[in-house]
Image (cartoon, protein in one colour):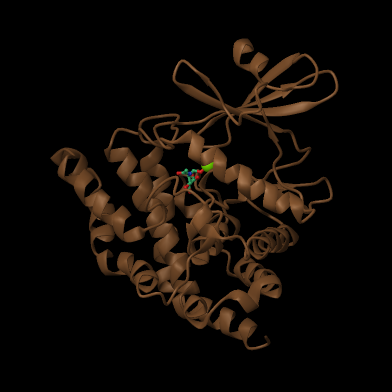
Length: 349
Ligand code: GN1
Ligand code: MG
């Protein structure tokens, strides 16, 4: 790693390297010199097969946000002025370290308010950014219809024994084929617009200061065009729950309706004007769908040999899938309750 470190424009000698294992995709290290801290990441090329295009996106987005005088990631270039360092087929990139705290789950509604505000401002700041300038780093990333079809393909290669063990999860997912198409079809029909989206605004991708104020969204790897509904629902997926997606005791896992209310109020306060009627009327459904989508993604990876998400043990992705599918069902059974909460809020706008 010393060889890689030497290639970047870090000021000062690096005296400490600590691995940070929060993300499920890239390898992240916090570096410290005598005066500064930095983030060094090895990009997961199984997931991101074009790191150059990915970094081009991050460069454009961070410049745009920076020009608005808002806080965002700051790329540290290599000694030739490039955005990446390549070594033995691996791609590395670096950022300035932002002094902050991250949360894996939330126990304080004021943090929910901050998350929603942070995401809404991110969307607002990028409203004028022409999304066509961004490379599609992962095609069909939040296309649930595509994710469903890939799940079916993976099932064809899964052993009968494994399928029997997971029969209830499989049957539940297969019964949702039509649901998986709804948002995608509305995009195709241009009823739901494409916009610049973060595409991975989970709670641990939001930095907070010591006063619990949100600083900015990080992990800009998947910033590209998409529906804003995936962003809103993905933030809700990780903010408005009793436990994180890592919790395996499902009795402890439930949706927090009061947090949903705080989230929606805070988000719409900033960005209500840019949502159209079709987006608003599909918002509650999109929350159910994102849990289902994440459940399908985890279960697909489990059947496929855990190649995509980092795991600590062989059944890790299965347990994560069970967690997400439970929440998807809970939202399904409480759609009208969530719709009422949303209607009461939008009524006042
Ligand atoms: C991955 O990189 P990280 O850990 O923030 C994944 C997201 C999932 C998330 C689940 C590129 O995000 O889509 O929602 O794990 N990122 C990618 O924790 O697939
Ligand atoms: Mg990521």
